[in-house]
Length: 267
Ligand SMILES: [Ca+2]
Ligand SMILES: [Ca+2]
Image 1 (cartoon, helix red, strand yellow):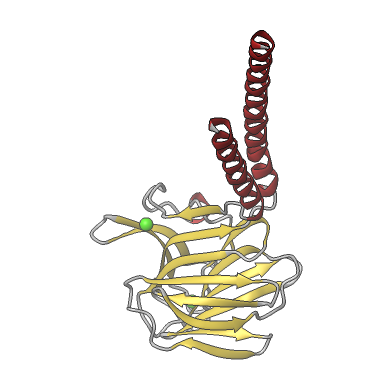
Image 2 (cartoon, rainbow, N blue to C red):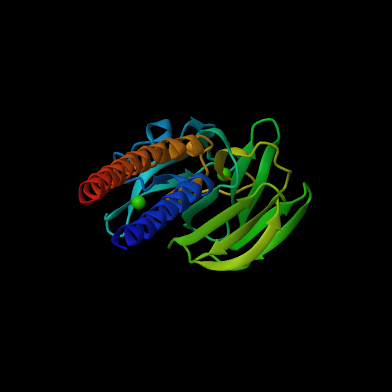
C-alpha cells in the first residue's frame, strides 16, 4: 500500500516535470535591453553615449547626456539650434527582431516644434513612422496617410511614457500612452524580417532652439536561440528524472529480492 502511494507521488512528480519541460520550450524568456543613461558621463555626446551607434546630425544639432529633476536623473537630450538642420541618431539592434515591445519616456522643451521616431528594417525602410507634431502624436500609415493617435498628449518637458507592441504578422502595432491603450495602427511599410534599428530625429523646417528629452528606453523581444537554451536547461531536468527513476527501480528490485528471500525462507 505504501509503495502504491509512493508510485502515485512519483507519477505526479513526472507530470509536473513534463509540464515544466513543455512550457519551457513554448514560452521562452524574453531578452530585455534597458537604457536609463545613468551610467554615462554627464555632458558626454553623440556616439560616446551608450545607445547611439550612429550620429547623422547637422552642425549645431547635438545629442548630449543632460540632467533633470534637480540633477537626480540623467537623460538623453537632443538639442536642435539649427533652423535648417536636425539631430538624427540611430540605435542599431544588430539583427532583425520579430514582434518587439518598445517603451520609452519622452518630453519636449517647446510644444510648437516637431520630432520623429522611426522603427526601421534594413532593405525596406521605416516600418513605423511616429511624429510628435506640435503636441499631437501622429503615425504615417501605408506609406501615405497621417493618422492622429492622440492629441495634446505631451505634458511639456515632463516625461510621457510610450509603449509600442509590434505585430509583424498583421503589420500593425498597438500603442499605450501612460499605460492607457490608444488603439492599433497600420505599419507605414510592411515588415519582412522585422525591425533592426531605431532612429530619433528633430526636424528641419524652421524648427530651432528646442530640446527633446528621452529616458528609460526598454526593448523586449523573443530571442530565436532561446528555444535551444531552454531545451538545454530541460535536458538537466530529464537527467534528474532518469537518475530518480533508476534509484526507485533499484529500490523496488531490492525490496522484491528481500520479499522473495523472506518467502523462500518461510516456505
Ligand atoms: Ca535616466
Ligand atoms: Ca532644426
